[in-house]
Length: 250
Ligand code: AMP
Image (cartoon, rainbow, N blue to C red; front, side, top):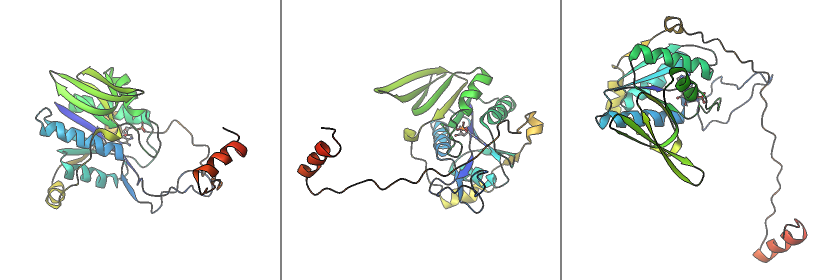
């Protein structure tokens, strides 16, 4: 079974995002970029399936700028077998990501596609669901546990009030949540070895996909500055008194 994993290069989650002065988007100049954290978890999950002997090959795919090669090399150092970059400098929208992955699934004869539950830059949470619809494959979203047995994949999901377990027939699309695993750090020898692993470039044109955005960004603004509203109280009795008299909630 071959697994395709979608990885997006995004602004590092530790970086404070700055909006461009003209409101035309987020300022990415000189910003530290990194692998989308959910995608790193998807990569880890796919590698574990290979290590468990249920997957034969793990292929990482990124649609993004030339620099996304660094992101793909990171996945190769973690244990991915090979990587594919679809070069594109603009904003990638979930529908074009889904169409690109659909074309790659056919080209690679992949049986499982693993994605993050959302890209932390656009927060769309759509690419996986759109891909499952385009392929007409079953989908398990927000996986917090995974098991493969008898040609089915079991996806555990945290839902209101507990855990839900779905059994999906393969081929399938799975998107992963934060608590699925803790991604490994690549060792130095693995980083060196990753430099020799295959990283192929395929154009969107070759795949018959048009990546031109369909949405227009009208404006981006900073969130409103929070007013300092807290008051420190010395004792629990003072808190209760304030809740009674000032807040009038007791
Ligand atoms: P989104 O629907 O944009 O929140 O993205 C959901 C998931 O789709 C991400 O966590 C990635 O696994 C995948 N994805 C989104 N954009 C890209 C991209 N440009 N290249 C590769 N995978 C992507």
